[in-house]
Length: 114
Image 1 (cartoon, rainbow, N blue to C red):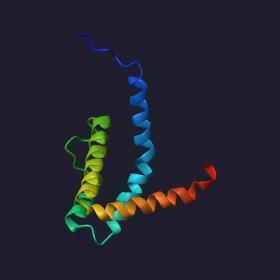
Image 2 (cartoon, one colour; image 1 turned 120 degrees about the vertical axis):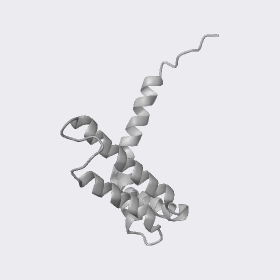
Image 3 (cartoon, one colour; image 1 turned 60 degrees about the vertical axis):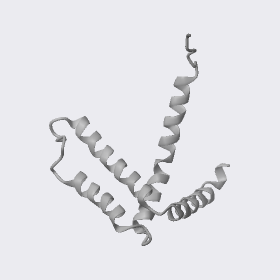
Image 4 (cartoon, rainbow, N blue to C red; image 1 turned 90 degrees about the vertical axis):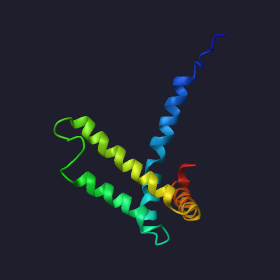
């Protein structure tokens, strides 16, 4: 049995990557809104604050000056994982409320481009 290769596989990957890049500003807005919201548990916010302190501190698991690319990549991965944890640990109805508000803001801001 021979598997057929999808000729559009590479294009699909590029489109998925483009979608992720396109949504980064929305994810940042959502994270900032969740950090300000009093309904989000403190321990979820503490993860993000801890990640910020870790990134700004001179002590790293992989030092930035020894392996510059890997050191910065490690900082980015830790930040992304902590922001994802913030969203997952937040109450779903709060996240949904903020997502809808961000969507409305984007529709108002970019209504001339439609």
